[in-house]
Image 1 (cartoon, rainbow, N blue to C red):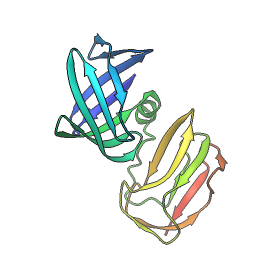
Image 2 (image 1 turned 90 degrees about the vertical axis):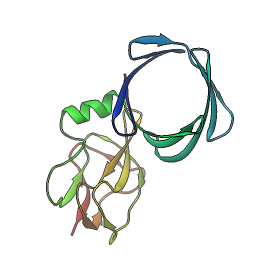
Image 3 (image 1 turned 60 degrees about the vertical axis):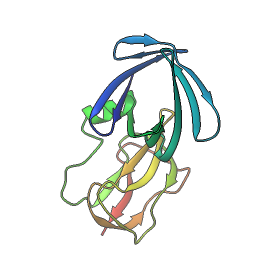
Image 4 (image 1 turned 45 degrees about the vertical axis):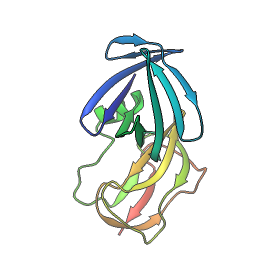
Length: 165
């Protein structure tokens, strides 16, 4: 099940099963056609929608335009929801000294370099776990001291990834 948040406050539960989709408990059969890398056409419940991806910050965080209206979307799959329930999606410390791997995975991309100043929620690196990409973000303001991993490194849970000054 996916939880999709629209504009930060409207949340929808979406269940995918083959070509069928359940939104808010109602089963629908969407007809989605990809026109280009950023444009789609959707027919849903006998209504037509033109979708244009305006900004793709990650696979799960994007801004889209639907029939001329702009929407910010946040998507959480079951793994994101589990991390949230376990309290591993954010840290509440005033200043973090390091970022550790919340789960075993593979480093797909490193988005900062040593010496970079980062603000809270700045994307730091992308960790692939269970075939899903997870963006690890800064939990507070700081300066990247050392990056302890490289792209394509396999990491274990709680392994030190980035330290801060």
